Length: 508
Image (cartoon, one colour):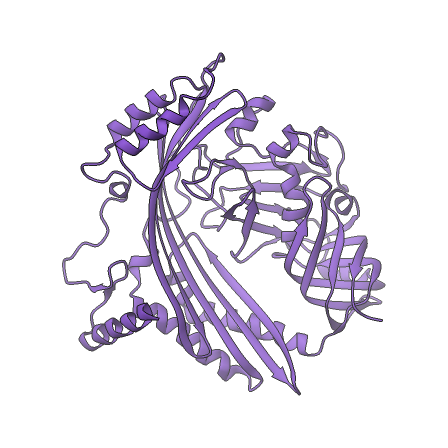
């Protein structure tokens, strides 16, 4: 609360003087003042650490290992929560530190600290000495790249604090004016700026500067004593200006409001095995959870995935092609390089129903005798990397979505999903629909509530009987959890017709 009051005072003074704000320090920006130094300076504090020292310490610490790296990170983030017509939360924080990892065979030693100094790295190196010396050849460095998939500008500092608060306030007022049934509006706005550097013992150094922004709108409507909620979010690796245009945030309001109003008329969902039509875009989260995790290299090396040892086999219906691609510009799940320094790329995992391969970090790739795929990811310097998805989606087919709908004699159309659970070993999943409709004789019927989709990933892929020509990626809100780590991720798919999927419902 004190932060919000302080911010309000600063905003009022800045408005009165018509002066922009330095968000990081909450002080006015004077003409000619520079606010953003060379980003690498954040990783090498004067008098504590320099690039040559980092290189020397890494080479010494990893001399017994066949792979590994020093991972340096500086991150700053902010978040605003606007609820019931008021700014309820406002936060700003910075974090910096390093993670030092040594790999010898299948053994990994890892140490981290929130201090960027030669002394701290030297202490971490003592842990690396505990691993057995490697008796194999040193792993080659990642291939170099100068590709940049997103801007290196800092979104937090480019927009005054007051403008971000005003955006939330404007969205709140506009949403309430849309419909008299709007009872509550919640707006959240968040931004992040990451500077990372990977230093290897072989002299390889790679730097990446990563922006990330997100806007979410949630609306509660009330009619005749009944309340329902709708929500919509979007974001990506770009600056706030993409979110602040009226056409963008107005669409977010429209989508959230439409979903809430639809749910006002919803009836209890039926239960049983039936044909399910999945909408394009965000419903690809089902593909991500139920299939994507099962295609990560670590699960398959250990033989704990339903897809283990099945490369070259048919695992899906003809026409099903699943791709993980971290090289799409500006996407939430994209990275110019992964957190081991490997450039991201398009990885075809399933092609026309045939399993082609898995996504890999450096460790699992080496142990499985394949090349890294650019999927070594970590939440922060406090975590070791592991194979993780980036943007995972199914490619479009040739079917007209309207024609796919016409094939459904009795089933449901699932347009949007909420939360879900999945078991990686079996691929079994449960997902909750946030917007869904009955379908009878090829026509959309009443909206339904309380619908869940139940099944297992490998089986679902074999039951796909129609693939739309309308492939779409999600709007940029996905987070992927694995092993206690969360990272931004993207999903997508075309309209899909699936035969014989179990629907859990509440209708009697």
